[in-house]
Image (cartoon, rainbow, N blue to C red):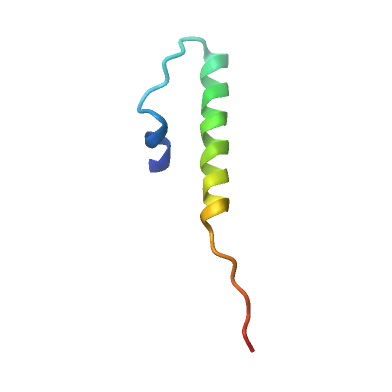
Length: 45
């Protein structure tokens, strides 16, 4: 959750629907960055 702060501390929208949309976008971005940065583990026998 600390990664969300890098996208801005607060949400500027006053409408609840827009706030929800912005939060979903931020979460999707964080998930995408985490997927790109995670290492693939291969078993070496």
